[in-house]
Length: 487
Image (cartoon, rainbow, N blue to C red):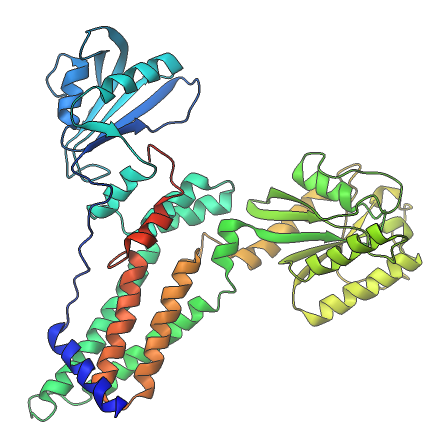
């Protein structure tokens, strides 16, 4: 009974939304009838500060503060005297730029004041703008949200812009630029076009399947297109969350026996004295974490307690936490004392390294530290070691080779932002792609054409939500809340 009811519902939905490819209208956010203004450059003393206004009263604000009061040529910098609109007191001599809508960042009339960056100048200009009727201070992310509301950016491009603002490494910058350029959005649009074409074939067969005018193989063509899309979506979802690691940082854990030089390596890679270095074994009792830029990739570097049977309850807890953190690592840096490889602690740890390499559950680099203490002949031919790198944290010899190895390993963990298809950088992306894939699974399993058509609509709706169509205000609030005021 439920199947017949669902069939009726699906057919009714098909009749009311036949091949509607337009996205849901984007309601302007924050009450876009007002004109907003804010400092768009950084706080504090600087050579130039940029103050931006957007909205229908932007031209009035520009005329109120400048002399002469006529609008400058569009998108050309003009030198103007800024004055308080009520007292006429000079505020600054600044460059102003006029951007009439819709050819502006927000799609509205916009104006920028490039003033001298002293706090008094910035404060005076902001106060003057606040006294102009119809203007109010902008909220966080409101300029970008208006750009989204007016179709200047889709939601994936907005997220790319946010990631670019927060990028701290070269790899993050490259990935953010690709997303801001619309690569992920373009890919989603091509997938949506594939679904639209398949849906057209299915609905044509439902409506005209008994007519002789319908060409042969219509359903087979739709099935082929859907199957190709399933393969593409599955490949993106099996990327081991590389894009999310690239955005938030890979988890790199430094481990080894006591006194192998783990803390020295952490200090060397982070370029600051994060960990206490001491000849006394067991100095590190807890997990110390520091975000670092490793060979251009973001990483959360963890210094852990030396792996041994602790002599006291505090050190035992530190060892337990170290082992727990190893299970969470994306990349393990296993450190040994190159001058003391025959010691019981080194031998036991080498057995652990071999087991980890055999399991292949995580990527691992074996680093033999204190190479400056080795004899001229080196390690000697009698040692049977896994693939390793020689390093001296004291002299920094071998650091270049280690950074190259880290770059290679982290590119595998995070993905190379310069090549390949665009990466999924947020849980929201994965959610909608998985929803799309699940809907296509329903399509391939059902024999009812009305249900198959509805499954294609659900799949296409998930792709629309990914780029911004039909998104709820709650979702938009979450995305825009990380933007600063002025952007």
